[in-house]
Image 1 (tube, rainbow, N blue to C red):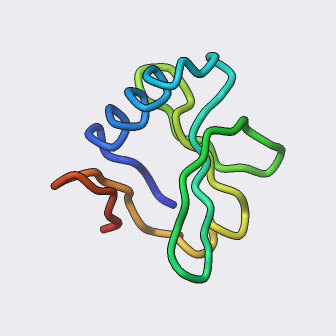
Image 2: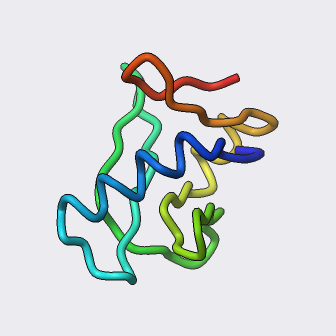
Length: 83
């Protein structure tokens, strides 16, 4: 994944805050055959990390990173989308 937009960062940060997630937790993007899933997790070695306002809000493992290379994650119309 190349980047996340400010809007995606705001939504991810709000989700972490709503879940009362500790500062060392973030959202993990998991690529699955039927689509994608977002879960609260923590960074692991080899992850790509994306921050918003100084907090890591999203991590992407190597397999998902390869599948989303050169794409930007956005949130609009109530859902996450790649561009």
